[in-house]
Amino acid sequence: MSAIVLFDGVCNLCSGAVRFIVERDARAHFKFASLQSDAGQRLMVEHGLEVPEGDPSSIVLIEGGRVSQRSTAALRIARHLGFPWSMGAAFVVVPRFVRDAMYDVIARNRYRWFGKKDVCMVPTPELRARFL
Image (cartoon, rainbow, N blue to C red; front, side, top):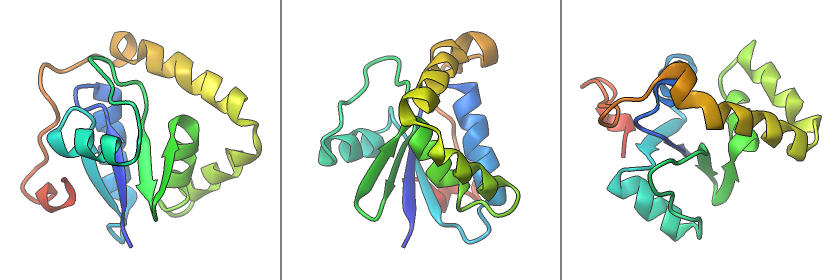
């Protein structure tokens, strides 16, 4: 069973995170869609999530009917990436309000620190099958 990662397609940090995941996801467990895409918007609505306007600030993981956001999504993704990245999943013991506070600082500043594209990330031909 595959999982779906929804991400901010114009954010350089987020697009870099997707490339990072793809390079370490040997079993091709993850599929991807930008939050700005029709597929991303449809999945958000289907799972009862607020559809972001203009500045989507959360990564979303849909896996086995379960939806995770922000730091929890990142940690659940990490557990599938193999050693040593899977060790990051151990941070789930840190209270979510602490993890999400740190996540929110990065999310709020990501465009300023890492930049923003004018258009969503376009997958390479080799990766196109992994994008919805």
